[in-house]
Image (cartoon, rainbow, N blue to C red; front, side, top):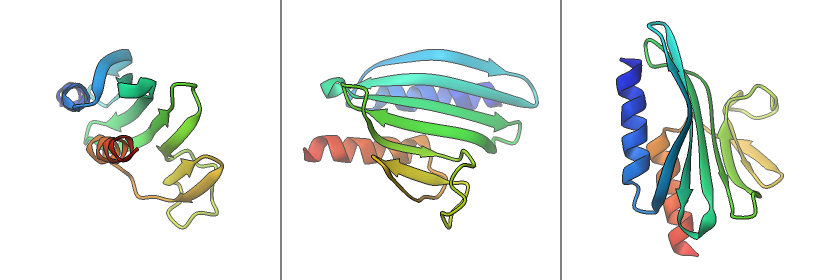
Length: 122
C-alpha cells in the first residue's frame, strides 16, 4: 500500500508540465511505515524538494515541500516540524522567505498547483 502511494507521488511529480526531471534520493517502505525523498527540477532552474514519512494507514507523520529558486534561495516551504508553536495550525505551517504563516497539511498535488501558478504568473 505505501509503495503504491509512493509510485503515485512520483507519477504526479513526473506529469507536472513544468517538471524537467524527478530524482528519487531515498525511498524505504515496510508494512508499518515508509519515507520518500525526491527532487523535482522545474523550468527556470527552480527545484521542489519533497519529503514524506507515512504510516501504513497513509497518514503523514512528517513532511516537507521545499521550493527553492535556481540560486538555492527559499521561495516557499510547507512543513510540520514542531518549531513554530505560535501559528494557529501548529505544527502545520508555511515559510515564505522569513515569514511563517498558518497552513493546513497540503498534498503534493496542491503544492505543485501552487508552484505552477506562481511560475506561470511571473
